[in-house]
Length: 429
Ligand SMILES: Nc1nc2c(c(=O)[nH]1)N[C@H]1C(S)=C(S)[C@@H](COP(=O)(O)OP(=O)(O)OC[C@H]3O[C@@H](n4cnc5c(N)ncnc54)[C@H](O)[C@@H]3O)O[C@H]1N2
Ligand code: MOO
Image (tube, rainbow, N blue to C red; front, side, top):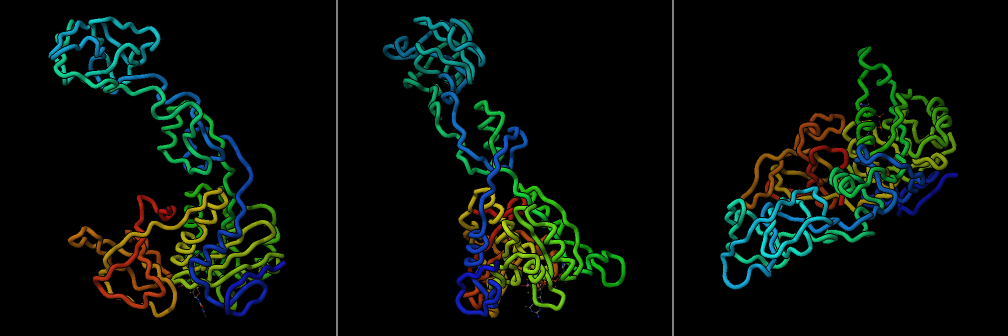
């Protein structure tokens, strides 16, 4: 039932190891466990943002459909522009956007007033933008000879009929919605949303703000928000007491119901940290635990039959970082999207640091200025506690202090992951 994997060194029991494994290796393990969800469903285009396309979507027609004008101006025939200009041409009529491309006249010696997007009859060779003409109402003076095809958007120049417009596996964004709406798609085949259950553990959370030692549950709403932001269908499992039997019984009830169970808390070594033992007691297994990172060291990756079980540490900053590094990728892999890595950028440290721990450190930072080359200068926030989300909430991003870097001084270059307009998933390539 339990599965082991090849981690060098460390005590291996029931598939677990006491060795700290590097972040990159932990990502490989976490993502390597995932089988993409099989189901496909059709969803309306409006509302499809965030879903992952299950098949290539192709152009049903050439794009654009017909030759059309890129400018407001006059459609002309080069044969009418002999010798040296300027040329005076009669204006025979107007072609507006929406006019039937098949019935537009072409008259020798005459131009047509034309508007942007209107079809260009094939006997016209170019459109001259109106700023380059003198518009005299019934006739027009064209000052310079246009090149053949000038200001004409040709049928099929963007895509031929049958070309792939958006490839299967693409996460749909507003820009895809616009393209697909403009090409007549109304329903999209998308992968079924992964079903993810989110559970908090801890007697102190059950107490809420009642009693002197109770605390509010910060992780569950945060993890639900993160998972929903990545397109998961989330079930809120509430809070489980720090009790091995109760936790194991809960796991047994969850068998075969979800693609992933995401827990936070009770992942470490304390006398009440029962989640791993409860998972094994319920028939699950642990593939890996303990990653060389700070915060987030006690994160574990397991399975309950076909369901992934990822256990994040209870400290809220640890849970957040663990989600971004591992769970976001696992959800991506459930959806058939495997990101290669985070887009790290370079910043100048506004602080000294030491990495004595041998762990890669993730530090909330704020931009405090830029250097002469416009590289951001970042300062660390907070005092290094993984129990507080306040620095993260006030941060512009997270600095990554590599385990091997040992120490760094104010003014040194470092890597950081800037937040975008939301932090649902750190930008990944
Ligand atoms: N002797 C050791 N102690 C600890 C170690 C260790 O290696 N040896 N690791 C430390 C690290 S690192 C972390 S991270 C924490 C992780 O502990 P657990 O995952 O077992 O989490 P808990 O003990 O249940 O809780 C830790 C902390 O977080 C608070 N918490 C838990 N859940 C929530 C929640 N949903 N919302 C808000 N706050 C939560 C909890 O009250 C504790 O304060 O272990 C260290 N200890
Ligand atoms: O590694 Mo723990 O996640 O620092 O607090």
